[in-house]
Image 1 (tube, one colour):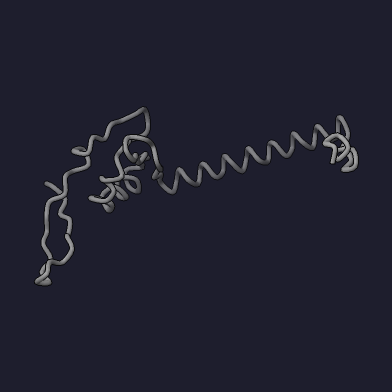
Image 2: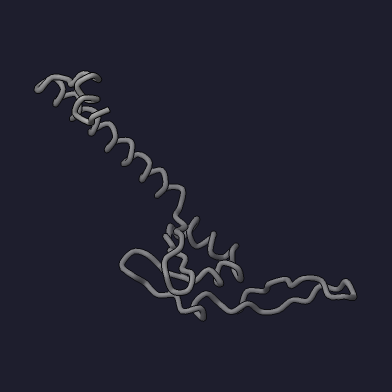
Length: 117
């Protein structure tokens, strides 16, 4: 059953309902774990698309003129990405500290001299 989208009020002040095409009519396709849909699908069925991401744990790539423009991911995936980013930053900081302990630090005056500042 097509999703109903409320249109703007007409000059008489009476709203009309029209059927919005389902997302599949916009040419969505699977690419490994990402579903790609055009931004027009979001305009026609934003609530349904948010539900797909929220409850279906699906990640979507929005395209504009056939090119990737943005992504919609679940909060669970966003939290996981943030944790991975935090871990990568902590690992890089530990590696830097090990390198400083092994090789010693370079003073600011030495850095400025190397860069001709």
